[in-house]
Length: 221
Image (cartoon, rainbow, N blue to C red; front, side, top):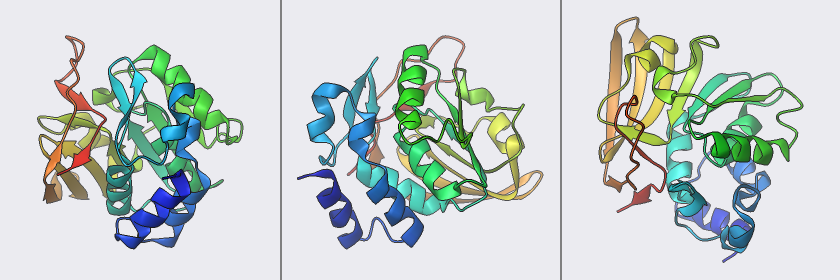
């Protein structure tokens, strides 16, 4: 199955629903975010390795999370655990020239890999995406607050920094343990939560100064 056929399948199966996200998936080719020897596998609906024990996440799961997040033109979005840069580029397509995506990746080599991949679409030159290599659990306080936050890593709980850096009425989508959660900030200290259980995660051994995380390779069960 090639990549565009996979996208059509995600549409048919109702994982991709909104026009803006369908356009993003059709125009941002997953192959551009994979190592050379795996580019032909872009249409496989499974996580694919990108080195350092990390993966380019399963397209079904990326679609599911982005449909929950509902990125829109002009928004300021924090992408935690950017990895290959694919999700960052999909978000960049959605926020367009008037928005901004801030991408954090803790592994230096992957941070460069992701940045170089996103640059293929001129999102770096246009200043739509900015990358930093850092501990994602801290968020990005210098660029806060954010309209929306998405994380491709599963924590045991939500770091306080993410809650603080999200705007009132902002949305956050992230895995916690074996579920994906949609969090909406109602006030400075009140949040609504909606759980979507039934996901498995490839484990990541984090640095000793990081909150225990699991990253990438999300698979629907």
